Image 1 (spheres, rainbow, N blue to C red):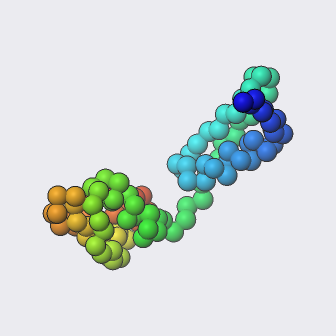
Image 2: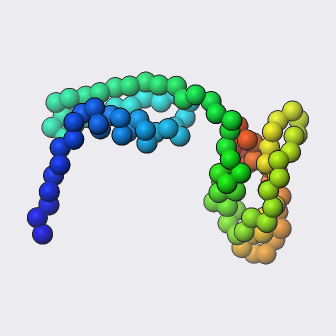
Amino acid sequence: MKSVSVALPPTSVVLALLLSLSAAPLHAELHVELMDGSVRYQAEFLRVQNNGISRDQAAEIVKRRYGGKILAISEVQKGGRSLYRIKGLSDKSQVYVVYVDKQSGRISR
């Protein structure tokens, strides 16, 4: 089977990479080098803070960490912070409750 190589305009490559990094940390640098190494682009950007993570994203974070099933999710205020209270069932059939910070996505018990 013969492989085919497609050349994209440099601006398309940079735009595609910037769009794919929309969930990047607050501060990020992007370095792109073309295959021949002759052209290099560098962009530095700051992500605009949004309203935090969604319920689905919080559930996915907890599921990746603990496995099992998510039983319930509710929004709560604790210490002046907005959190998701997530009740889950582990793979070992143990019920657990954790809190996920809506802004940072950090898990606490």
